[in-house]
Length: 257
Image 1 (cartoon, helix red, strand yellow):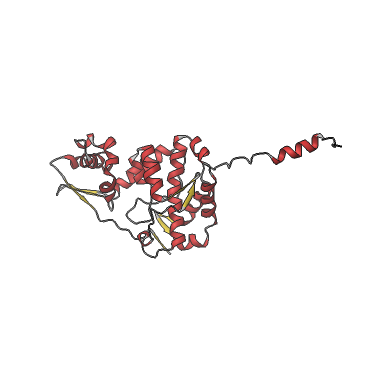
Image 2 (tube, one colour; image 1 turned 30 degrees about the vertical axis):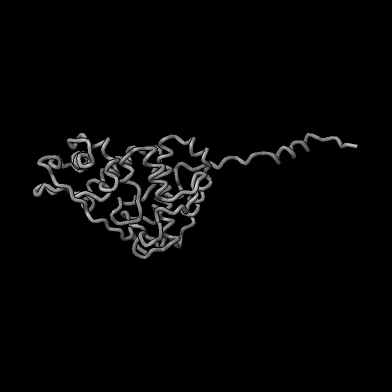
């Protein structure tokens, strides 16, 4: 004979089939913000101290992995852009802590190419984040002023995260700071020589849509000239056929152990 099923029993059975609520990602990026504020000073990372106190970083990275592909697709464009910028910078820090290169990220085998990280429902490398997600999706040259690959010639790593709110202002400020850092970009007016970061040699095409016409053309050289006119504040960079030279890139670590 069958026993009568009570309401409480049905409730208990139903609870077995409940779907676990989706992970709620913190768009304030609070854990990473604590990491950056504690261990980054004037763009330099105290890797030794961070290695001894890495729980917040590991927690943030775990949060990146907990986001589903569907969740990431539901982010607003600014949320997604901030998410992937912070992910790139956080995962670079994790890579340095895990591999412990003493002098340069280039000492790590396939540092950028090997898929090492789980983020938003996919396994990714640093190059995947930069070249398959951020650059093609957003087509924003200012990204090159905020993605930090742990090298001294990279743009400086700020001691605070990027968030959707205020993102445009932060990107503009970072772009201008990168432009006017004379160790990365400068114009010799007397010699009529543009000394530009190697970033323009590698990714100059990304700047064409925004800067080329200002520089008097529609190619990469015009884009670099336009960038120097608008961001560096060097209008003479486009006059008299200024020569373009790329600065040596310092791949030594942006910090110490």
